[in-house]
Image 1 (tube, rainbow, N blue to C red):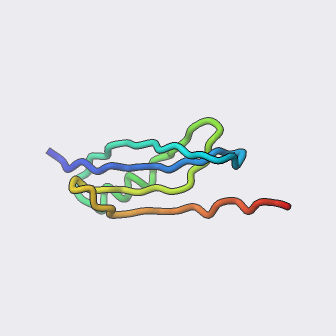
Image 2 (tube, rainbow, N blue to C red; image 1 turned 90 degrees about the vertical axis):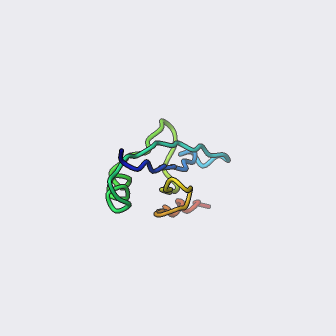
Length: 76
């Protein structure tokens, strides 16, 4: 049986209103390296939302990889 990793995507509203959502998926992979490569391929898409951050956790809930996207600058 392959180890299971947890991928969590933090999404924010595309129109920059307050709030966020979390989308999670389990990933089965033979190693941490393979789990990270699979996580990089996964698209966290939800209508009206944009990706803010992604984290990958192992079975012990230890973060093994993360990626954060810079928020768009607000125009004044």
